[in-house]
Image (cartoon, rainbow, N blue to C red; front, top):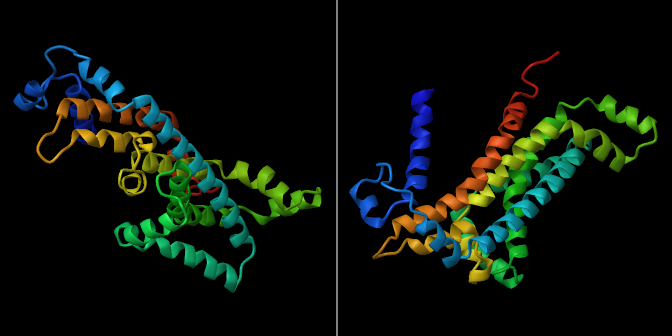
Length: 261
């Protein structure tokens, strides 16, 4: 376990310490500890690519998209499970079929459709696209979880006077907390760190996310490794903190239903 932990932590170590090095130090030894902690790279990146603005864009996109995915997927899965039939199966497997198609095959049609719908170079447009790509996996996970929820709980709530929305918000959502947390974590890590989708949909500097803004330091003829590593450090620190705070919910979501009684 220690060896595996070191194996996965090594790239993180290289990224963080390289942000404190000069270009010559990095070229001399990428893994060596910096001679002195120089914050010039972090200060330069903070102002050069507008880290606060890029952070705000990433935060708005991630929080809004993940919230929408959780709401729509859980509600859709609830109805599909509790209303079984041919139509529900067609809808369910039709949505899941999107998981089979590689994203690269959809890039050109996606850009054309997004352009026609005026979703290019806008945060709300990217949020809508993320919802489209994120719903299938979330729906699949919610669908399997709701099947394990006893219908008697809902019937008892209906006897007490709760309608469909009451049962959903008061009974089902609290029970789905473990799987909701797991889906939220997985989609947050994906959307926050995603580079390709913002690259093909966002064009103006004011709308760039942190991964997209950091790409300016990687060029065909020159790579500013110190600045690039500092920019990447800014991008990964929020996700590392988020993951450490939420990791117990991942374990809880994975083990839910594994043990009966």
